[in-house]
Length: 630
Image (cartoon, rainbow, N blue to C red):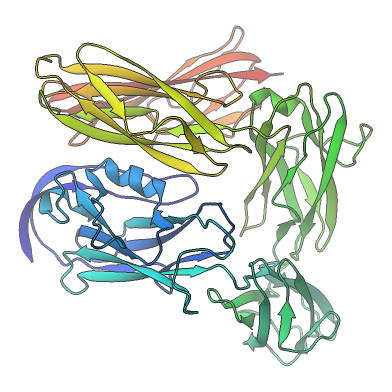
């Protein structure tokens, strides 16, 4: 197919770290073949283990597999439930490139369609373009109002709608993605992920254990167990010898003992596995790999996903335990790092120890620990509150487990309180004509333990600019809920300025300092204005920092303005160190670099990114301050 078009390019990558986007504009004449496929198998958005009034997001990833760019011209979701919607991450990402959800059609209330800013469902000028081997992630969110109430048809299939993606690919112009909702059946989870029998010795019997747990909201039935490629010298039996089919209640599990007595030193378990067939609607068959090569691998297992320490009395020590186990065949090397707490000083009141009392040995954050094969260690999170406040945070448990290098461990304590999080905190309106109105959005979410109440939005602006929001006040956001807020910018007919600025401050019941995370800066650039890049400064690990720590700095997620390009030397890192420090950024002109902290005190780290847009050079700046202790 030959085509000449002007396009906006978009790449979306879903993940725990967030979405990454890039934009470009060009005139191209090219002969190409485009194609795409669904990364997941089966190609479906699957919801399971749902809880009442708890929002849950599921995603599916589409990949461009042709040898030329793929244009997506429309995305339509025909929903079977009024409780399912496009995820906030997807809405925010696509809105940056002029895509938004189409208007509500009372004749077809089940239909949700993405359109461009002119209301057109398709169009070359606003097509999403995926370069070869890049991805787009489609996300949906469901919030059941009660147990089992998903709004989906009660026909036993779990089907609750279809996503249809239209493209310009000649061979596969359309892909249909089923939406599966499973709220009342079991959900099998196997632990550990691998059974390691290394090293293998002829005639010597080794035994390992696995547990299959029902993490669903209904009964789970194990209907059959199949060995794939397993030798006759391998056997397995349920720990209390219960026959199949085996019924497992919600939250319960079954332990299986697996034994292997190799007939010779040359016998291996390479490429073998055990498959458990269950009655689960989604992921009904789950498996565990078997290995016996070399000395095996470490396999970390944490008994808890996190701990809630309750509402302790000020000055009183509280402690709760969790276990770190090595289910692999090699020695586990691990360490615990602080991944950030809110408020930030709570880390001085909380520690990881080997016991529940003040005399227990404290584990130094970042200190290397070891654990032998099949061994476990019990640890305690100790907390002595200095004030009656709500705190929350994370520990990162890092290890040499090649499958699970980092596990995030969540900790919370104190009275129930809301914690607001807002993003993005800067909105750029560009190309606004006099007398016109343009719209962008931000998302406010509640990461706390109580309802977030928004009572007012204080607004400041300059010149004749007018910024308004569609959020009806007062507004309540439940724990774990996120709300999209549309901001409209109306440029006055008499406004001749090239740039208008504004600011929104959310007034909420967040117990932290007023405006904590709740300020949105507004910038409007007109015909003679230039849209700057959007700086992205990533620093890892998170605080607290000590002398000798090496920080990894990353600016590669900085976003270009539409139609812009980076300058020849786009990045510049700046550092203001404390007195007595000779610290310097290793390569201040690189997107990814490092910083050695050589002295205690207060540091200020800055990032400047430069781009060319509209024939002009424009910059963005971002600064971060932190304290280093001896």
